[in-house]
Amino acid sequence: MKKIDRYIIVKFIKSVLLSLFAFIGIFVLSQIFKVINYVTSGRMTSIEGAKYMAALVPGILVQVSPLAALLGGLITINKMASSLEVIALKTSGISFRRIVLLPIIATFIMAGGVFYISNSLQPEGLKVARELKRKNQIDEDQIPVEKSNVYLRGNGDYIYHFDYINREENIAKGVEVVILNKNFDAIKSIITAKSARYTDGGRWELDRANENKIDEKKVVFHKTYTNLQLKDEPKLFLTPKYRKEELSLTELKRIALLLRKTGGEAKEFDVEFHKRIAYPFACVVIGILGLALGSRYVRGSSAINIALSIAFGYGYYIVQASFEAVAMGGILSPLIGAWMPNLIFIGIGLVAMNKAEY
Image (cartoon, rainbow, N blue to C red; front, side, top):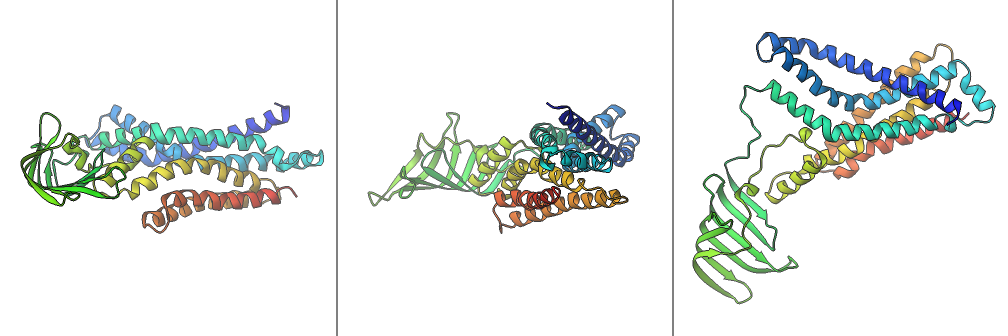
């Protein structure tokens, strides 16, 4: 690594860290009085209040990292431009893209850190904070005991539909099971029964069931119908209440699949899944914009550049929230809704980067 590269990257890292500490400090000040109220009212002890604050830090770190990358890049290049270092480097034949190469690489590393935190530390921190805040309230995360009108595609070639199911009593009412062929494109038989129970042996037994064999064009009555394939546990039919912010990517994907199987709405989990992957790259996208905006120094224009950068930074969040809402409404796919803000702002950043060469 050349001396000029070390010089630039050290200045950039210092500026980013300074911005992060400033944003986290603002967050702490905004929360401290709320925590004091919790402690004085007896809802938390002093230690729990400190844990509550610490548990929220990963989340705020994820949220402000793109802004820190933007301000870090702006401050670093603006200072170099104000001392004519940028002009001197350009005059010596070094392009602006080469000047900002290492800071851009640093934003990619930063994006990796944000991805890790948002997928591990943030969900756990939000869960801890909620439990501390609501420790005296009823936990709403338990799987429901019963549910009406449920269906589930089993692990084999069959689909269940129950009018009612109770997981504690291991019973179901208004039972219909559709058996399909291996290609899942033709019905082999339909079994209906007024009730069913999940046995200790780990399978469903249907009482007084009628089996309509489509291929053979006949109906067979069973006092007790059993099928070794029908072994899906009652809890799989019930949709628990999940908080998507407290789930990892693996859990989001698994729960979205479970919700689709049980007839629930999985769109918000699909949107969160793709957003969790796309969002960390905002550090790169907005960071490039900050580096480009700081390239030109005009006396008295630093405040304008900072204000413009902050406007672009918060503009990113507005655009992201807008596309997230559109994806939730089903107008766009979750994948496109998550990545479109990055595509828009990387376009703006590349235009600004191109102008910074002159």
